Structures are given as C-alpha cells and as structure tokens.
Image (tube, rainbow, N blue to C red; front, side, top):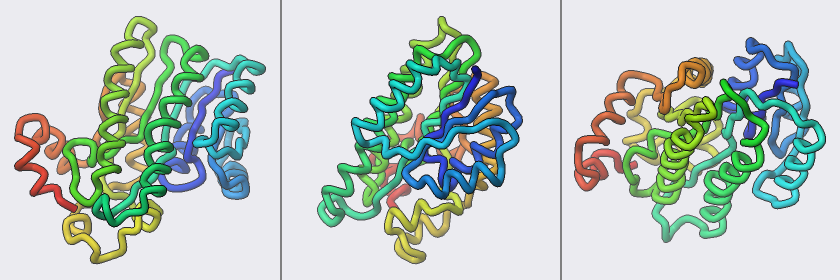
Length: 251
C-alpha cells in the first residue's frame, strides 16, 4: 500500500498539500492533526483517493507511539511524508510566555524529528520527505528568535538527512515560504500593524507553494522557496554577514 502522511493537515498549507497530493498514484493519504472534525471535513470535501483520519497531538509521546504501532501493523510504503505541523510566536524572548515557546520548539523540532525517525524504514527509492521550514530560517530574527531558531533546525536537519538518504534514493526538501494568508499570524500573535516589516513583505500563495514544493521534491531539489523576492533573500543570506542582515530582517 502506497501512502502519504501529512502532519498539520487541518489548516493552511497542510490542506493545500492534501488537495495537491490527490493527483499522485497513492492508495491512501493519512492526515494528522488535533482537530478530528476539521480533518474529516477536509477529506470529505477534497479526497479523490482513500484517506485515513488520525486525530493526534504529535507533541505527546503516546501519539508518536500510536503512529509507530500503526505503521508496524500496516507496513505501508510511504511515498510522501509532509512534516508540516508547526507554529510561531512573536515578541522578544523575555515577553513571550516561556511555556508557549517550549511548546513551539517541541512541535517544530522534536515532533518533526520523531515523526521522521519512525517513518524512514517504510520509505523506498523515490520516496520524498517535505519539511515545512520558513524564510525565517535564513537569518536569526529578533522578536522571532525562538521561531527562526526552530526553523534553522528544520533547514539543517533536512539538508543533512538528504545527504544520509542519497544512497537510498530518497529525497528531502525544505520548503521556505514567506508570509501566507493562513492562520499562522493569528496563532503567533501578530496583528496587522504589529510589524511594519512583516506587513510590507510580499505574500506567498498557499496553493502555489504546495504545488511547487511537491514538484521540487519529485525533481530531487533540496530547498524550495516560492517567489523571486524570497529566492533573492535566500541567496543574500548565503553571502552577507548575519549581523548586517539581522537589522534588515528585524520583524
């Protein structure tokens, strides 16, 4: 049985990944998020192939163990893994609730690593891992210190894992979009006007980003960044000192 697994599938780009993956030769798509009702509604609305709704909080050890046991029982071939679950927090480190920052790091870093680890043995030649990173991974961001650090981890992890999996012909792609019209900013606590820098950035389209990410992963690319502006930002981050870019990128 060939499947795709999508974490964070109940909203934002996760929904777009689900819609776009319907065109792939898969038997089932396993969707994971905490909100069972939202997952079910999305699947019923957009599914063209089989699906399985897995309401889980993947920051909980019990959920990771449950998924691991399900994989052991089913022994599917995972053709696509979308590590998409994540959120951000906005504000200086001393002003943002430390529990919220810890929860974000658990989801963005720890859970992504655990999900990847338990699924790797069910992948074969041609499988793809698509990790949702961010333009915030390019340079440390003041007022988004913990978030940008978590996405830098995703970026580094993706590139190193891609190297590890070369011999198995499994590709890993880090997706680095800019701001998108999703719930991200509401969850992060960024209201309109809170950051002139963020308000001035060009928006990325979630559907185009999902489509481009899947296409890039299938082509074996390591990083996908939508929009020419952000491609330029990624290039600039490779050549210019961070101490200079941090002033330009400050949220």
